[in-house]
Length: 213
Image 1: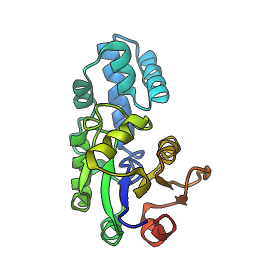
Image 2: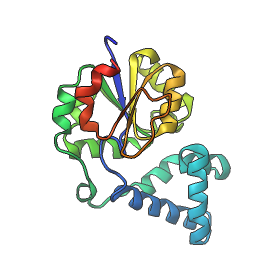
Image 3: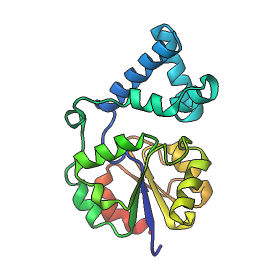
Image 4: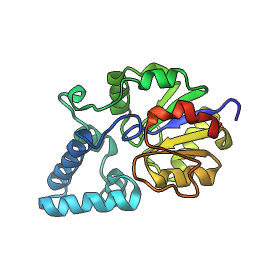
């Protein structure tokens, strides 16, 4: 595939968000629902998880059912006093990206400010021609096809010339339906038929890229 564009998910793809960052965000979201919806903690946590499972992002459920201001929600739930101390990533990532042919874009459900802060801490922001947070996607999260189409339209890209690199099989399913190539990052995950390449580590992408290009 000549002139390919790589679309990279951020959390649990380019870095390990499950170690410290996701627990912090999940707790902040639960507190937000407790406070603004006046719910007991157990109910707030259950609702957070329900909306995430149904819509792909807790935010979307809050906007649809409670009229929540998405920018306020994102600002309140993505506050980090010492984000750099919570980051878990491989410092060899920059070298891998340097040697990976093609344009590269970050495609995340997180807010843009958080996305750019994470990339800056990892020292890899310069490798990407664009970074997309959920604000640039008009608050439509993956796996919604509309999120993908907004990015494709904004960047004047054809789906068949794009490769999505993700840890989420649901997001990869949408990408394949749109005509993209798909790369699944993760240990112990099965390889669904709509995944073209499965890797245990993002660092293996450079030497395996020929299998999807």
